[in-house]
Image (cartoon, rainbow, N blue to C red; front, side):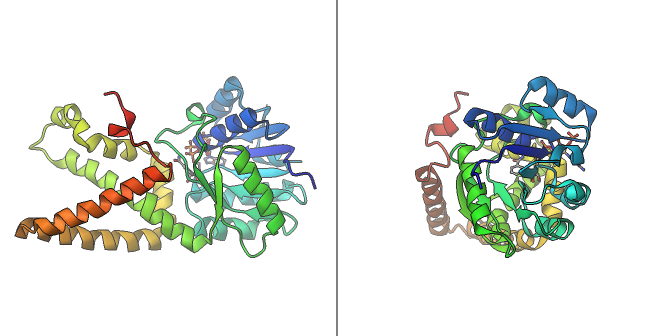
Amino acid sequence: MTDRYERVALIGLGLIASSMAWAMRRGNVADTIVGFAPSEETRKVAGELGFLDHVAASATEAVRDADLVVLCVPVGVMGAVAREIAPALKPGATVSDVGSVKQAVIAAVAPELPANVHFIPAHPLAGTEQSGPRSGFAELFDDRWCLLVPTERTDPGQVDRLARFWQALGSRTDQMTADHHDLVLAVTSHAPHLIAYTMVGVADDLRRVTDSEVVNYSAAGFRDFTRIAASDPTMWRDVFLSNKDATLEILGRFTEELFALQRAIRSGDGDLLFEYFSRTREIRRGIIDAGQDTDAPNFGRTK
Ligand code: NAP
């Protein structure tokens, strides 16, 4: 078995797929990169940008003879796409995905795939609020984690091979169970997105503050919420519908903490607030020490 996947098929050609293709080109990670997306416009743009060797006319054409197939589509359509490509998969191929939720994707995809392919779910923890084939760039995965979530059917040798693929794209890799993944991501990504959506919605509702004031004075902190709240609506609708339990559990805890802080503000409990904010500042320091963000003031922005 060679270590390299010679032919890689990407289904869906948005931010993640186009970034994977650019990173594969940069690292000379595959001989041939094929891709497919349903809209003619996306296929045309992908062809013009040139991150693929071949733009396929259908998902089944794209996966034919591929050694690695990566589903880069919204979580809610993963099962339907797996059903469509299943008859055309090459025996011995690896099928993976990049979905932001793992238990629901495994439940939808695993039953659709033939027994003679290796299914290795994965999730690169890298993204931006942009979407579509124009938004991708080769450096997206550099020094970011890609979590591999093998099922009990997965061959460990093939998991190592996929890990090396992601490392060649610039990522660090780790393995996790699907339920743990969904809980970790509910804390680090899904609940924060919902809170950002809510905060931006509140500002929009608050008629005593004008729209121009919200826009002009947003650098005071609000604009960081707006960046997150500008994320793709389809993707995030699917994330919340498919990681319901873990997200609701974290939001329940969030609400309790929020009430405790509200009570501290109302009763003038400065010690509690100071101790709480000191603890959160330490968490931020930990993120910087782990190389997952910059310590430059205001995220290194010049304005
Ligand atoms: P995106 O830029 O919106 O692209 C999604 C792609 O999926 C589009 O090319 C779309 O095709 C295609 N698609 C939609 N329905 C399809 C179907 N039924 N069959 C085949 N293709 C279909 O999304 P993305 O940000 O790359 O996200 C893709 C996946 O990565 C999602 O599962 C998401 O949870 C995960 N993820 C995202 C991020 C992030 O920050 N964005 C980070 C990590 C993981 P058309 O263009 O033709 O509509």
